[in-house]
Image 1 (cartoon, rainbow, N blue to C red):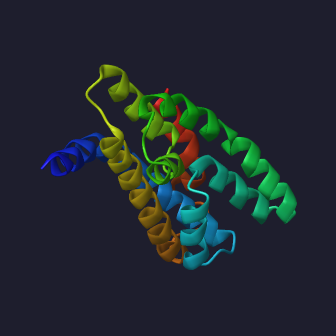
Image 2: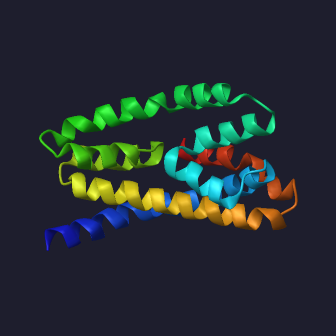
Image 3: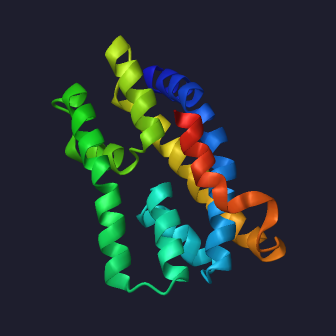
Length: 174
C-alpha cells in the first residue's frame, strides 16, 4: 500500500515538471529533425543523454558541422552539474540499494533536483517518490522529443520562435 501512495504522491509532484517538458521537448524534437536526425535518433538521444540543454547544444553543434569529439566533450562538460546535484541528494539516501540509486541519478535534472531537494528537506520524502518524479519527467521528455521529431517535418523552419524554447524554460526557472 505504501508504494501505491508513494507513486501517487510522487506523480503529483512530477506533473508540473512534465507539463513544462512537453513544449520544450517538442521544440527540441523539431529542431533535431531540422538538423537531420530521425525520430529514432532523437528518441535514443533523449534516452541516453536526457539533458535538455546538452541536447540542444549537441544538435546546434551537429547542424554547424562540429566533430563528434567536440560535441561529446561539450555535452560532458555541460552535464557535469548533474554529478554535483546527484551528490547533494545522495546524502538523503544512505543505505539504499545501488541499482535504485543509479536509476535515480540517471533521472536527475535541474527541475527534478529542485523538487526532490525541497521535499527531502521537508522530511516526508523518500527514494520511491523521488524515483517517480525523475522517471515521469524522463518519460515526458522522451515522448515529447519523439513527437516533436515526428511532427518536425511538417513545421516550417522558423515557426513561432521555436529555437528560443530552451531559453524560455530557463527564464521560467528563475
